[in-house]
Image (tube, rainbow, N blue to C red; front, side):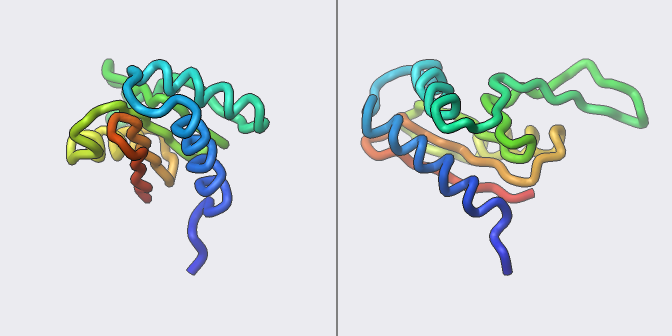
Length: 124
């Protein structure tokens, strides 16, 4: 079985590791997002930062929209965290909402808030 977007996900995680190696832990989320944006630009990765995903009900646009940290290649949602408690059920649920609203198939949660960077790949 082929792994969906295997090479793209591998590269994205590599860029996040580069951010981690350069900055370490202790910064707020926005600093890591800014650094990731630099990595995406330098590596010619197509992305949208703070991408808005509308939700429809019976062809009606609902008021609530989801905003993901990054959408890459129009297929991969990247959610950035900097929390000591790590990747938890709430973060997973949040990212699954983004995947459902966006139609993307892959979600990556990256957490820079611990002594070691952690990540989780979600498939919709």
